Image 1 (cartoon, rainbow, N blue to C red):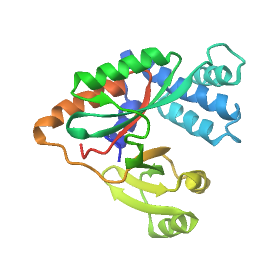
Image 2 (tube, rainbow, N blue to C red):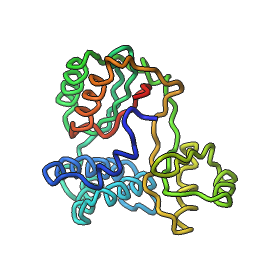
Image 3 (spheres, helix red, strand yellow):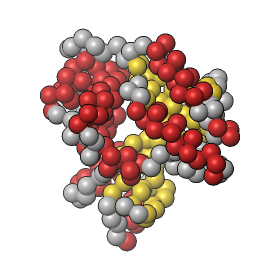
Length: 236
């Protein structure tokens, strides 16, 4: 999985402190704007926008903020000049990183990412330096699963289902994510998280002495307003 726990991220997003809520809304709004810009402002026909709106609602983002973000993406409001840029690099001990950003100033974002990585012994790399170590997969998380539902989801295209602390993770091919999510919602099953993630093909152990440094790097990436998400092949 990614280098930061998605379960903890979900609950942290739901209970974020007021002084950080504005930064969270900025990130969520950028994702909505880019999705609307790419596929239009109707979430019924733009699944990526639907996912971005669902994530914003899970983060308690007000409806007015969501609507404005959509309008920026469709061009009905100014401020939609945001682009998606993925950076590849390495953290300490050769840990691979893919960092997805949404930015209106690529020079600012590039400088910030370089600074964060170098601060903790890492560095940026060129395109395709680490992306081959990852593969995209649809990830859905729900609270519980029964045998009948599990069989139905497997028949519908779920490639793996894992029960873990805090809930159940369902893995799909990216193109099957919408179908599986629709099945769950039609059954009135709450979907706590749904997204396409970059999953490492193999995980790498981190020396115990370096874990603290790596966690601090992850925290700074998480706090940067231009970083939408990041993925790593570490076991941390």
